Image 1: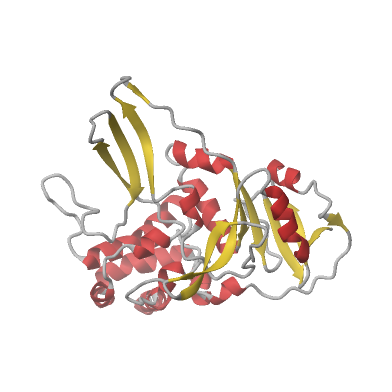
Image 2: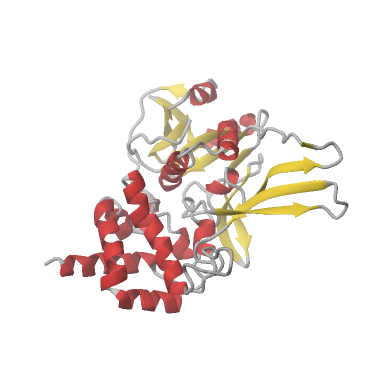
Length: 335
């Protein structure tokens, strides 16, 4: 068994920073509260091995909040060349975030590959950190799976991963497996179970819009339409494009930036027509995309129960509770 001692992980990452920036989950004070974030690793960094979850998701490394698609130089009459993304490593993704990244890879590849996303994806080295032995998942180059309080088993998944373990800190030796359950299961345990039957979730959500209208009235009154749930979700990827011209009239820039289906103008088109005028309609559209359309297109829900939307919702909407209600009401209607 190839292993690394927990006490040697920081030393290994410190060596990796000589080749590329490394980002890892760390604890920081944000608005008076201690939260987990993916921050740049330094020798003195204390890694948060059991984060639940980070404030912002790892999608921002590949689908930034705002990025230029092209910059046209009017003086030279040509598009300026964009520099290729520099190599970097993301260390410590838990099982939820690994699954989300694997799903995002699939989403951004259809119907055509998103050039900008995969340019950054190719530059990244992804290292997972699991608290227990789980089935091997895609989306990573290397996985560190906890086998006891002081050791992690190494699972190599790609050529990038093979290069990473060519280090004296990784050793082939027997180990005693004593690790417990994963803390990530404590966030939304019931939703995690529901996600195992995406067809039921899809049927329930679609049915509820016409047959369980009261629940959407209730949610429409609660939702603030702020878009935070979509911004922090690792699987929300909607964006809008914007063109701008510099004050000196020498540059034209097209940028794309995060957008959210819960925002008032998301479904508005030319002439002022808005297909989703009310918060209730917009909030339902978010559920429909994640649990109905996603199932029809990919055979699974676009949700990994990471808990960010529920934890950071300013209206304190218990999304897990409402999904359970929707499914239970749907089941009763079928009896």
